[in-house]
Image (cartoon, rainbow, N blue to C red):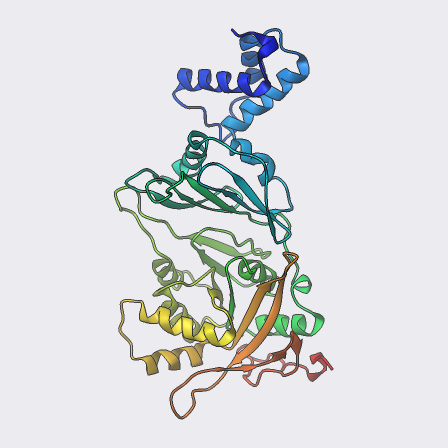
Amino acid sequence: MSDDAADSPSDVARRVHERMLRRVGGAHDTEGVISRRLVGDLVRQDAPLLADDLVAAATDAVLARVRGLGPLDPLLVDPSVTDVMVNGGGAVWVERHGHVAATGLVPTEATVLHLIERVVAPLGLQVDRAHPMVDGRLADGSRVHAVVRPLAVDGPCLTIRRFGARPVRLDEMAGPALEQLLVWAVRARCNLVVSGGAGAGKTTLLNALAGAIPADERVITIEDAAELRLPRPHVVRLEARPGNAEGIGEVSIRQLVRGALRMRPDRIVVGEVRAGEALDMLQAMNTGHEGSLSTCHANSPDDALRRLETMVAMGEVALPHAVVREQIESALDLVVQVARRADGGRVVVAMAEVGQLDDRGRLGTRPLTEGGRLVRLPDRPARAVGAPAPDAAWLDR
């Protein structure tokens, strides 16, 4: 028992949490088994003279330690926060509306390590000096990346990319003309790749595009971390799995793409292609799975095609460059470029049609937009049988 008058709620919370750890060998309560009443009783036992409002504050602090991510929880429930960054040394920064700012929170190194362990342990992963870098996700789909010593020189670093609580509509990312063309492209079963930089809104646009997929189609999504929440009734979500601490049990995106082909998909949506799975994705598009969607990191539609060619070359099959370009030309119809504005909004900034190979075997794109305005319609026909052609009335005059 302590000197209540000198105690702060955080002091009491720390002691109660340590007591719970000693009793049960761990106090993670991801399923909400530990009740508020139980914690309140423990707080009163530790500090019986503490005022009621301070008891409530200490109880909240203990529950934050045993559920969720403790001191980061208020940031993770703030809808304006898109990224939470804990730097080596403990300083916590957040991104709101495209701007990064310090929060004033400075958790200890032990606290940050505890938070990282709380994220990765339920996933069967391990982070320590032998495995100092790990990727994971929270229950809401938010992506988590952690780096600890010796790679993180100043102390453990934790980065959380929030999964948006509110789905973004297509008309929030594209003007009326582009919106109509994108909806047509999805319904006409064109194969699309969304390109852009990190945090540009590629996954956000995929979610918005999925709203145009007919409700009776079976869609299979494949991702590193399951972020997509497609607003469709018949969706099968697959998630890649890294190897455990012994390097056993890995299931790659490439394996999932191959497996998805046996699951009777109408469409396949790959959250992001980064390596050899690009070839499997292109082959799926070329073998009857029209209307498939994916994303890649690239600075422009032309760069996206070059990136895809490079990623195919990273695979196990050493295909000639000419063959790879023929696969890309045959499989892809449109490339949509997204970017993040200064205010944090994500928008479609360019759209291009995949061109034809020229006499020298080079592959490029035919821009459909200028300055974000739709000025041309695609020449490629719809892949869906009986789908109408795009309407010239959609062009920005």
